[in-house]
Image 1: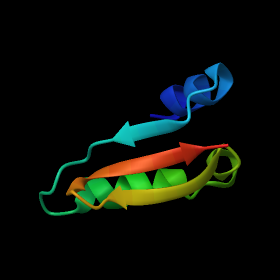
Image 2 (image 1 turned 45 degrees about the vertical axis):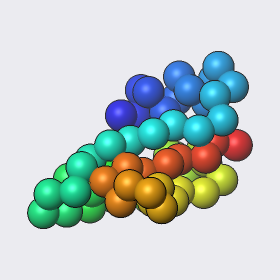
Image 3 (image 1 turned 30 degrees about the horizontal axis):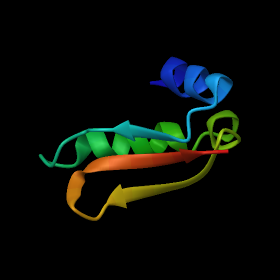
Image 4 (image 1 turned 135 degrees about the horizontal axis):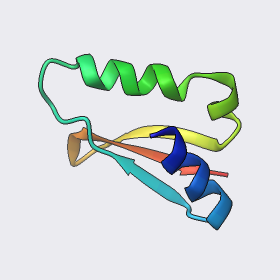
Length: 62
């Protein structure tokens, strides 16, 4: 996931979709923990849950 975020930021991608699914929420928590790391936070402007699909996280890159 880290590599994908860095590559997306380097190539000018606006939004990255991460799909941890709906399940128990453990994978979602891990994804959000990775996104909260300082060196990763510098890459994006905001993170949101897709309103039409709570199993999908949208990362809006800078």
